[in-house]
Image (tube, rainbow, N blue to C red; front, side):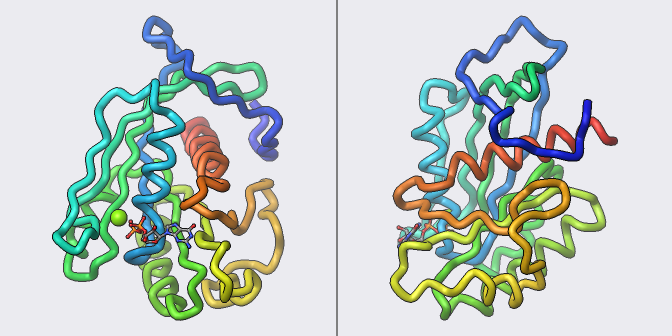
Length: 215
Ligand SMILES: Nc1nc2c(ncn2[C@@H]2O[C@H](COP(=O)(O)OP(=O)(O)O)[C@@H](O)[C@H]2O)c(=O)[nH]1
Ligand SMILES: [Mg+2]
């Protein structure tokens, strides 16, 4: 299989999960990571709606009295993923974690065994420092282990949303649209409206598949 180009048109996600086809069954753990309040749980809810028929376990979410995620949101999604006519049955364990600093050890636990990570950045200019800190944490965890990650910049609907180039510079990302492998440097999103949530998820699954076959 060629692995250098990731063309959206060759991706198809369907609900026809085939329990009898064990040959092309892959299991991945996908983590949503990012500072508190950036929209991780909102992404998770949108995914849960999209894949409503397919869920294996009821997604759960435990909140503090202030309505913030205390532990993690966790959900299994089953679906069929077609890539250049090759069909994969995917079981994706999707988890999000709290961005609260006092739970740092919990966050490391959540990242353990991750096959792909989606960083959810906040477009609120006042959250730039939190974005930077959280992204640094992610890179220091994911890079040595070769875990693929992508960057979603959420809340693009905010009137004072940070400019994408400024955000890229702050996080040390290239000012290009796409990396040489064809994946976007930034995925602008509005998780509240569900905009770009599924596309982002598809792309991390794709990277996890490529990584799986390269190891
Ligand atoms: N304006 C705007 N608000 C959003 C968006 N996505 C999430 N939020 C809001 O941001 C707040 C935190 O979201 P949440 O998903 O709980 O963040 P988490 O702490 O990362 O899990 C909530 O009030 C959401 O409604 C978005 O795309 N636009
Ligand atoms: Mg949350």
